[in-house]
Each structure stands twice: as C-alpha cells, then as structure tokens.
Length: 102
Image (cartoon, rainbow, N blue to C red; front, side, top):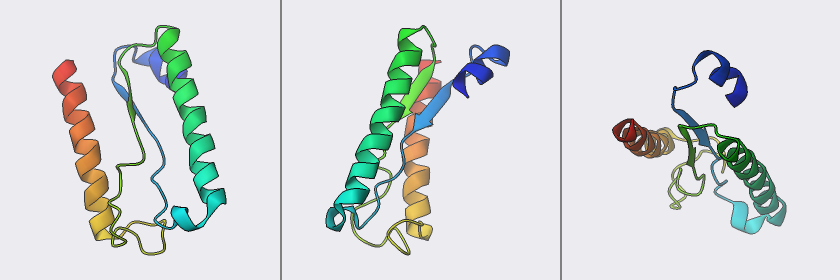
C-alpha cells in the first residue's frame, strides 16, 4: 500500500499504526502473541521501507492507543466513546508531530 501511494504522492506523509492492545490481553496469552507477531511484522515492513528510502513514513505504537482502565472498550476490543477519544488523542499527537516536521 505504501509503495502504491508513493507512486502518485511521493512526498505525502504516511502514518503506519499498530493495532490497539485488547483490554483482556493479560488473561489470554494467544492474544498477547497475536499483538507481538502482527506488530513485529508491521515494524519490519516499516523498517524495510525506510531502509529502501521511503521518506516521510511514520510509525505509531499500539500500546498507547487505549488507556488501561477497562473503560475504553465494550468487549475488550471495540472502543467505547472514551476509547475513541483516546484514539483521537493519540492520532492527533502523532499527526501534529508529523506536520511540524514537514
């Protein structure tokens, strides 16, 4: 996807975002492993792209997307209104930083 966007918009900032951490991950090792493996794959792709010279490519960790208070999701996965505000706050901070660099 990044390479396709770069064909038409080589200077456009792109933010790759990891999946949020499920609220009940600490109780389910398989979920923890899913986070670990999918995040490792995304980070490896980001690293490969940046090593190949894809500039203006940014990364947002998934661990900080939702607070750890149990109120951010309905079912450990899908965000409540509070969870969506947390997403918005995390994205806003990342995007502001990217725009200041541009």
